[in-house]
Image (cartoon, rainbow, N blue to C red; front, side, top):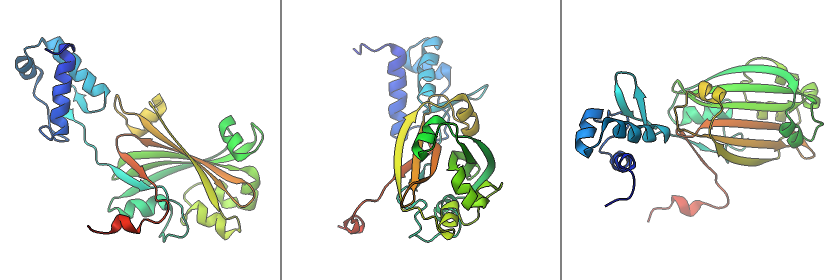
Length: 255
């Protein structure tokens, strides 16, 4: 006999059924009374088991509608090609990647002049509190919140590239715009982390209970100094990132 509490046994059984497709994404789970009878458990025990699955982001609950298996239509981002000028783009990297995947991009912008946060100032190698331009994007894929992206540019760079401080989109993408001004990004340093969302992140990305965010911080460099720091915050349940490093011709060969 299992030593686990009954609510955990119930949650484990339902998790296995979600994993094997018995309850596919978007389907409703049996009612609390049906689960109570199936597992010979009290209503409170059933609710505790279901609450555990909600906290893990596997199911959602709606007042009067019961419990539904979470939908996870994952978008895959190739981080090696993102903003790489060697690959063809019809616009900025986000719009190009989403469109090429057969999905529909949409984003909103705001632009601010503000003191660079300490961690950003350190990455940009400027003094703490130095003024920077923040270009903030709230991005969607098929009308579902996908990510937020906060890019900080040091003030010296804005003086040389004034469109960075203008509101609205830069159609060709900021990396291409800077290259056209003679400021080429020749390399970048990526940092990837995960944590639970802040209340503001949960609101902007419409994140349910138990779903973490993935933080992708990319610091871009010209030949002699940092030129920008971009912090992208993704919904952890709807995104997957990959990199291509080295010669990968064997990866595409059939057996």
